[in-house]
Amino acid sequence: MSDMNNLEAKIFELEKENKRLRNLLSSEADVDKVSYLEAIIHSIPDIVFLIDENGQYLDILTERESLLYRETSFLLGKTFNEVLPPEVSKIAFNGLKEVIDSGTSQIVEYELSIANEIKRFEARISPVRNEGNHRFVFVVMDVTDQYDLLNTLKANQFKIECVQD
Image 1: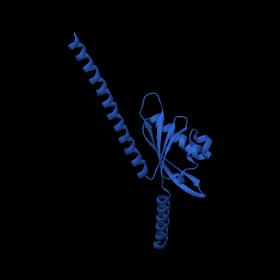
Image 2: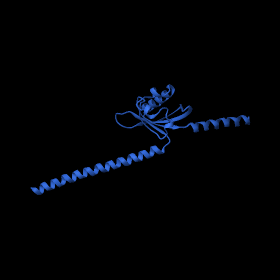
Image 3: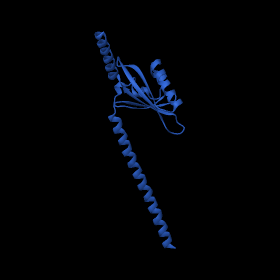
Image 4: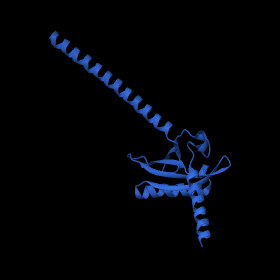
């Protein structure tokens, strides 16, 4: 009987060690994943917002705090209506509603005054696919330079057409 008890004790110890090693490997994988995601966030020039269906800011990821309408600590927990100018809040909510209704990603554009300068932004809104929670990712890009360049090109094209006439 003692051989059986020794075998059971050995099996128990091996299972315990196996569980410990699995937890360790899982923790290392989580650390690797976090490091990987942090590197991605540090390398993209955009702002990433996690928003709920009420327009509440749940998380903000960015390396460019200077492009935020208000500081992160102020935005977190607040809704579009509490923070943004009414016309921008309406654009954001309409985009959010379209994503909810269609289940597909949407793009909206809007202007905001940031540090006394009018900036133009493009927000790509996508649903976060999970059960129960209705959350959305807003990836917001500063497209001011591209917008200004496009307007300059249009103005130059108009001048060329006027000269040709």
